[in-house]
Image (tube, rainbow, N blue to C red; front, side, top):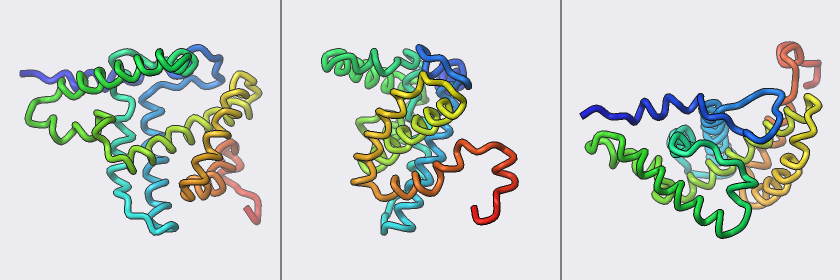
Length: 201
């Protein structure tokens, strides 16, 4: 029997993020998932190297690559809608869980066990899930500061909200604080600046 798993995932570039907002640069969930995977991997390596962690960085990156897979079923629902109130949020969580299980079910039965703890968020290791969530917030924050850097005020409230979330994360995850200080400043640099950094940078 043919599997539709890959066909669904290859539609991820068609699903636009930030759908209700003006963006200087558009973004889809395939791009977003790749960026979250890179950041999650970095966060895990930072924790292991700098803060005596014992995370599987490769596993964190893999979970991040698939963390939006369920959105191939219902698209990217904007945060003001998804979190409008507790009841709506709870219903969306049910929809997401169902979509994750539907996504898993498109795999051949012999492969489903291997993917269950990657795609179905309730089965993802809690520590790795927290790292991927932190990476998701950091990627959204980088998006916000880039949009603001290009004079797009649409993202002012997003940046403020994410600053508050990052403050909480930094208190519990020193790797997030290290990441922000080490990598964020260059994220709005021009290509010329990246290619020819000033002496002392």
